[in-house]
Length: 274
Image (cartoon, rainbow, N blue to C red; front, side, top):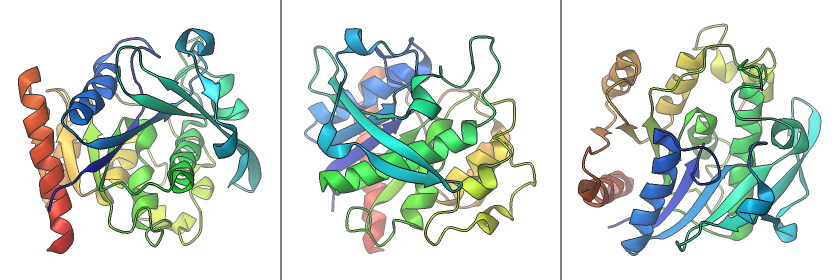
């Protein structure tokens, strides 16, 4: 059995944000996999530094205006879409005035991390999954890239596990060297509660719930891990390995990307029947 539908959930994608290892892969991997015949969908946050006019983003009214409750507060979900020039890749953007429109990425204009980055990640995760449901699309594999996607595996395997779109979906998480230095916000623990996910699900992690705990949370609910680059924290790779998860390294040569990821997706998806 082979995976044929891959949902890419990316923290960054070039050309919408400045080039980096993560943003380049956010574009490169979906494009390579799509050209190989896979059906894909791609999501990212609508960061405040994205130029909507230049990127030709427009709101998808039929998918927008749902209210997501985060820590007992209603937050409207806005969905925008654009196509990457010279490709067949359509990108869906998760937007909200409080979490994204008026903000930059992980840090503000002064280089200070936002104190509610954890809540932003939760809103992003739920916004993506609710939108995929509305699209009536059933991914075989979800591939998450970046800390902003760290709550996705948890929700797929718990709150959304009985949804038809995700009942048999496997989750792959890519780990990068980029790390948040500050905390995730005082409200993170309460904000993560949704459906059968209660705040005490985080009791097994450190009380202050650091970036390292966020990465461990993603690993705990993932089916496979990709190590991107040589500078990924060895402690977090060791954690994934000790849990018995399959771990691969992103290939150094571009020509090896397609086969490496195809084989990994199929291996992960095949485990459904094991």
